[in-house]
Image 1: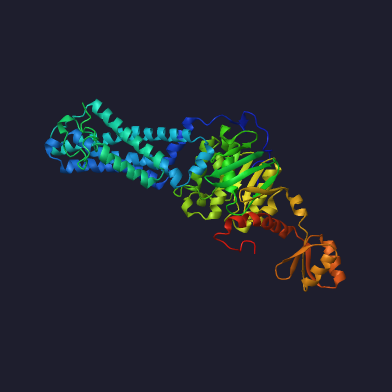
Image 2: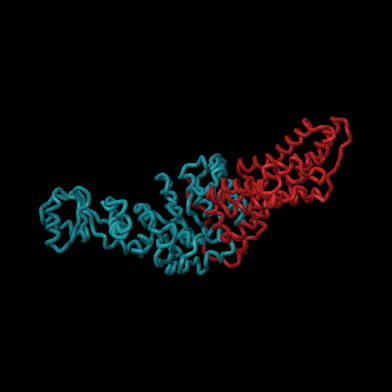
Length: 238
Length: 307
């Protein structure tokens, strides 16, 4: 058992610094990067992140295996990859918030940063950062799939998704993630917020939403949606 | 220094903390004592800004906790050692605290060493920790910013006897170097050994506070004898009140010397005679809290707590 030897110096006596560390307000950036770390420092967190990559690969492989030649376009790949992303990104956002309550780690977080608004803002920044990094990565996997798939099929790759389309997809997914985040903040329990998010996504939102006009009305729209008035149009693209 | 002034917290019709005022002084260990549900944890939550008081103020070194720019560097807090993400490792939990506070990275290993968590234990996930290990980790988190003030809620829970002795030494040293230590407990013995000052809370109200030595002075002495009826009567004849303790003991409101003389004069053999500072605080604690405790527990708990 170690004896006490933290420091021999007296504890008292500070000014604007604390043993060399400036006694300033904790910068928001530092809270955000720490929150980002907290999203992926557990097994569940890291696997959730990994599953975006894994499912993107699986979705791409599925398209290569089962899509007809004329369907093998970048849009098909993008639509397939969109499904795991629209599911997992909001769950990552939800868990980053609800974990503080369900795991009770908020007791420490909110005493180290005693302004909950700053913690929530930092978490929101971290979540958007995750989306902005993972979505292009996932579509990169899709692009690779398009090149490989069309090469296997012996046809020319079709790049039928415009930059505007891609931007819209990113925006849609970030919005979906923020809706999940908001539900996490409001509901504060993991299960409740995740269920609420899926209820929301079935009722109020077309499912993956990555289809350009010519594919609108296809299976990428939410088939179970009954409320036609509240349902957003399936084709958000130009 | 921690200053609590007229803090009241109500939840609907229930008053958890009722007009509580006390200070915890630098250089001293202040024990915050009370039965379960007395309002200790609520008061501590108010100190660190997790709960807003309905009225009154709580300040740390003259400032509200919410106004501290980087609280971890000024106040070390341990409210519930089990309130951690079960999937994080001990080292990771310390690293998060280190990052929030902005202290050097080597503090993590230094703290693990200080609380005697081995590198192997630090790499384990907290779900596999015993309560004692969680307490050590919690104390490490509280100390990593080298704060001047420590607020610890039931830190001895789950520690083995060696761990309790270790923590006692740590807190003593901390106070001797000018730190302010406030620790709560419902274990009288634990707090009696370590605290310089005591604040006793019962049913949301402060029922006693002051230096431990002052509070214990009135405690009297314990005498064990073969015939306590005779001694009790002899004590009454000498103007000393006493009350039965255990099977064969008496708690006499007089110092041991007088009780010894009385017993000798009465011709009754004495098995044990000592000043009551060990049992004294317990007696005082039960006495002070029994009244308030019974008020709230009559519905579901007829007797028992005092017996």
